[in-house]
Image (cartoon, rainbow, N blue to C red):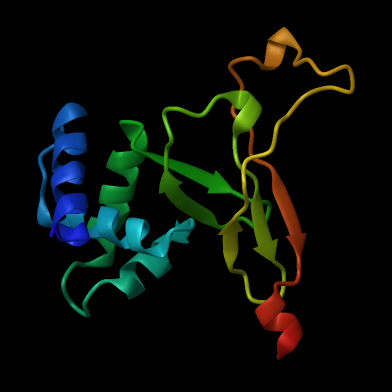
Amino acid sequence: MSNPTHTARLEFRALLKEHGLRATAPRLAVMMALNNANRPLTHDAVVASLPAGAHDKASIWRVLSDLTTVGILRRMDLGDRIWRYEFVDENQTAEDSHPHFLCEACGVVSCLPALKVTTLDGGLPKELSNATFQIRIAGTCQMCIAS
């Protein structure tokens, strides 16, 4: 039986190597934190998910910046002036980029299922064929409504 954490670490090591980066402990820790969260995280949320004192905040900023620069991560601002990071899905096209739900009460961001982006006639203007979409849907999450 394979260990999912071990498998993820091996995949992340290969991904880092593919992008010309060394598989350092801070890089692997950040990637594991984002993988385990399964949603976009802020710098502070990444730091909070790591063992206390394991990595300093400045190192995590550099890791997030490096991983974004090489295209492993995407950095986004969903209109609240807070940067969040998530893995880039190289298999996604502009037409099926996934939207995000931002809870305006607690600030948690959730990934929503991919949407098909087309015009009313079913096409996509050629100007948007290589565009990056950041669709944000805002409201109050179920946890905040319940409390």
